[in-house]
Length: 633
Image (cartoon, rainbow, N blue to C red):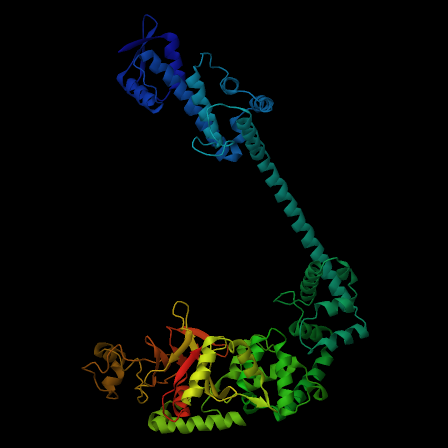
């Protein structure tokens, strides 16, 4: 037991109320201090790094450490929980600290007295420095840093106080600012909603009181294609929209106008785009008599289009021309119409048929596509036009090409071809080479890009010297050309669409001598049913086995690793033709025929994928002989 004076005991009670032991008083106005309290003191002394031996000095260290921890808790709670800033410090304390921050000197002692005004004992230099560290660390300054302004050195100077004051200002104003912003936003929303409701009411009145000229001008827009926000705003006389300085602001206003217009028509799907659907609603509500006339007009136009256009004709358009439309960023509807006009001598202007109407007819009637909105030709529609199936008859050169491929497929494996012809596709075509002695656009573009490359030049020399056929792969368009060489340059015989190596497995570029071709028949096609285990099979077809429609299976019919075709490619089998190029990379057919697209895809593990029909056609194109070399550029 150790005895203390009454003043020391009271200090201990104030400073350390949560002590584990109890402090007992004696009749001679002294207190007893228990062993558990001694243990707490020594722990705290170790934490505060005060290596003293006398008990009195330990108690002094305890008093300072307690103040240090209180300050750190106090300041950290202030700066981490911004809402409690004003609660933790009084306004007098804050104002006193703010007065000091402009004066450049050591304010450590002054600030200690401001924060702890009841502390009367004198502090040593080390204790003041520790307090300074505590203050700086609580603000967010660090001891070990290269930034001088943010470095904690235990001396509270001008930089420390300016940081403290800035934090206090930010935190004190943050709550008020948030409240002001929220109130402003609420006011804006309320005013906007009021203004919008007013404008919708005004728009309804405006549409109810339309003149006959305004009605006719709006009805004329129906069926022309595109968006009509600007035209309708001009017709209805909303001139203020176009007085804005920037085009972005005008577009914003036009979008707002579109949503108000749609709301006035009581539409459910409001997208602020006034298109053919919005105009149809307008006509239903305000000019229903015109709709019947439009319907009859559309029916007559459809009849005209049916008599002049067919799927056979569309499919006979050169595949490269369709590919070219997909690569261009312009209006694809107009480009396709121009090709149809030139090829089939159809004058759409005389028929009074717009590109939008023509596109709608192609999508709905000919291709039988199921879309949310018809009338815009994108890559999906072009892909459908580009794709050729062996069973669908074509016209012109495309039909001759199809018949030639059928002959070659029957020659290769007639029995299995008849079984799988429903699912087979092809992309082979004869490229347009010259027109009046001038090379066509496809070959011009190809040679502009590749004629200076090393593989292109070397392939030309090799084929000319050996007088053999070779292959040229345009890596950009994913077109594989069968070529031979003469004194003038390349002669292009055929083109096939392929899929090359995906990212991480790129098909190597360069010139390669072709390896020995490996040939076999069309492989066996297996369904999931063939690959089932006996237990799975018997469980699935239990009812049919009981009726005697199927026999019970006792053995595994085919191994589980046997080839199973993908859903997209139907039941087309992989032919065992293979043209080796280098290091396991070669040309082969694929069961994933969806990877061969109009734009050309990168999908394989380095090999060149082809349609089955194309690969067999390639085999017969060189009279069942091997190709000399391939250039990939």
